Length: 462
Image 1 (cartoon, rainbow, N blue to C red):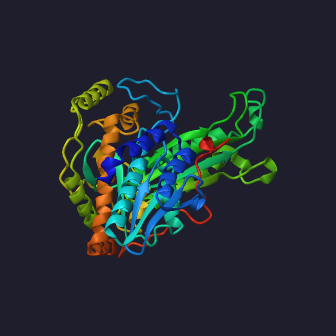
Image 2: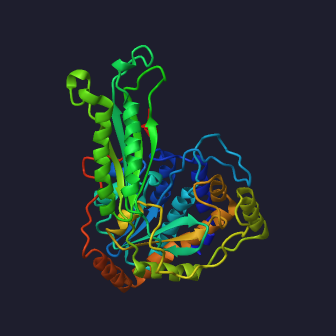
Image 3: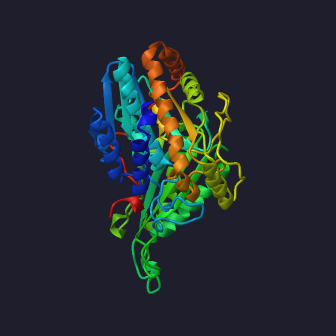
């Protein structure tokens, strides 16, 4: 009832974040809006946690159980788009919410506020803690929050994400290591005296060749992909500095590190190829290549006992109901995007605890899942077959039906927490399952205390 009564304010917050469309670690207005809503309602808010100005932790209540909700609110670069069924950016090249984090953030706040109302009305014991986690698209915030111990006392974490389906997700995810390699050379005139120079870009290209040859010898579950973030300033200058940003993924963290050990060797080999006999000689201006570790995530440790609680509440709330005009919007969008025209998903999928063994994606929620029982669900904010990270998902995320579906997520989140606060015995099987998953696994934070939250060089503030 609280969600229905306050639906306009929750939807307004989501649309405002959608309008802001702030990209990774620059979500200052979005974080201020969402954390401010909680603070105004009586939550205690701590901002700037884990060295991230746009991160926050908000808490209400006292004692156990401590229930965690997650809020994301970063947009994607280059996905600006109006709420239309044809490509039409708001600002060409600007950010846009193609992953629906405008819905994610506001939906979580709505769920937390609804829960707070129930806690006050029914004298529920426990604590609700909302984590404002920026830069999810670069798998940043949760990695550092977990490393810094911010989830250590949490009893259960309920997560959600905008989707094209109404279902609990137990799909696997890949472990990932994100890092940037910078090579150094010596500048010279590229035509007048190229023999005087050492090309850092040559080192990048040699490194790429080595990485691509490595692919044949990697496990089939492994992945390496990259972009050159800095390749020099002009063709007539031998580049003295060049950088490449990589994602190294695999089925689990040990496999990631096995592949990464080969990559480290290739970095040194590429450096030697570029410098030749001058390699290691400081008199020549030699400077060794640098590897800047950015972030790392483990594979997801899905907790089935938690998933069952979520599924029960998702089934109770049901799938969103769409009007004829909203279904027309979905079908027009699907047709324009070139996918099967099936409208919105209008039922709750059965809970499948035996999903495919492999997935291509990665998430920083995975690190939380090795710290406390965690499970996730989605609701049909987007029409079926519309992929995330597209102009069409950006349009759907700002649309009336997308905002309507978000309200269902608010209710499911609140009901999940009400269940475990009303009956803490529900947490026991979650914790037992979690303990079993950790018996042969020693979780070590993938980033050390010396690593600060950050982005690759081309995405940093100039």
